[in-house]
Image 1: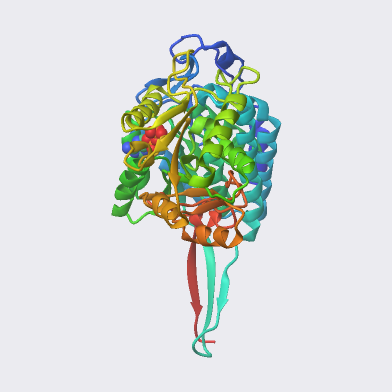
Image 2: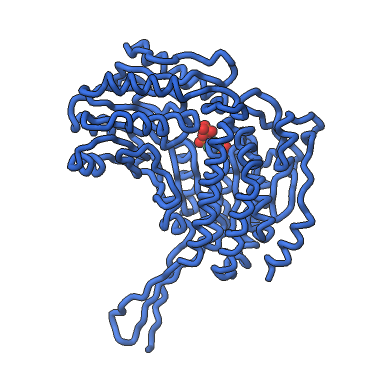
Length: 515
Ligand code: ADP
């Protein structure tokens, strides 16, 4: 068994962690303590530099300190990775499902074993509090565990033939080299939600993580290697923001790439779909959202406030399923605003994610802070009232005070664009019909939430919302069991759940004649 010898080999080949980056600058103390900081990318089972030798720095968004540097790979490196992945596919696709299951399970066990260091790595790279990062690692691991099981549940079909002499069967086979581009907001979970499904299906992978969070990706690759994923089956190409477009293009157009699975902004998703169209590649797109969070008069307001805190402020508001606009019926509008303001004061403590008691970290970068500020200013200029926050945090940097604004209307940018930050704008509405029209006015349709105790209304509204996921009296919809998918400009394809593996499988109809 190829993978058995590979595991034994891996036990001796753990890469030593650098205390200095590629060009000798010392790393921040938190980074120096983390055993997963690497200065190489991972292709063909080897830790490699960019062919041109270039690298880029990754900094902690909480304090700007250097975490490390990784290779700045270009198109030529991505081409190499796709070729290697294609060669490895020839043997990986021949593995039986149980072998893949065993490897994936072991990968999950290793993620669990190293959860503390993996969580701290997330906090270092993207800033969320360690407790929240541990939650992400649990979610990331649940994807591996789930798809380890799904590997053995890939079924085909037998179909009644139109004549006596024929038999028809349908089998499912892996699509080939699955290329993936992932974002920084969930640096581990967005990878395992794709990669575990692809590996379970029998595909090989070329992954380009976000330039802001490459270390989580490299850590997952290292643990995959230890778990017995053979060389070339899981490859990680790291690239700076400037080099990313050429790498993305290779992933979408290379003749040996079977397709692209992307999580990120709708704007980038459209670019990748255009590239992929040329070769009619498989595409799976998890794109932007603009979730409406609706509170009806009959709602349990305390439950709605609890749900709002999770749906809005988890990840400092940097989640594509995060509530982006609150629609509150007139009878409970003031009560909801008061209680939400109180909960925000009581529960949100802004600071460095490594500090005890902190529940909200920094935003990812200055650009993200500026976007939130722009949305607040535009709303206030057009008549919104600031109930809480409304400014940068006294810590400076990428920290912003959680903000609640009322008297919001649909002329304001905040109700038209995804904010991706800790800003809760509240719109007042009168009728159910009005709320549904406002909610559905968005071009995107990823998630929505609403609170009501009126059962017929729950059904009507759940069916009327033009989104892929609805939380009814619930502020957290994504679990491994739930299909994750967007409508409209929020994307194509499904992740997690029993459907997630389908993105990496293709059907083949086999017709037997002469019987
Ligand atoms: P954000 O602005 O929040 O970083 P993006 O959609 O720009 O969201 O980024 C998500 C992922 O897409 C990241 O891995 C990023 O490097 C990548 N990306 C950004 N621009 C491109 C592009 N032109 N082609 C391919 N990937 C891209």
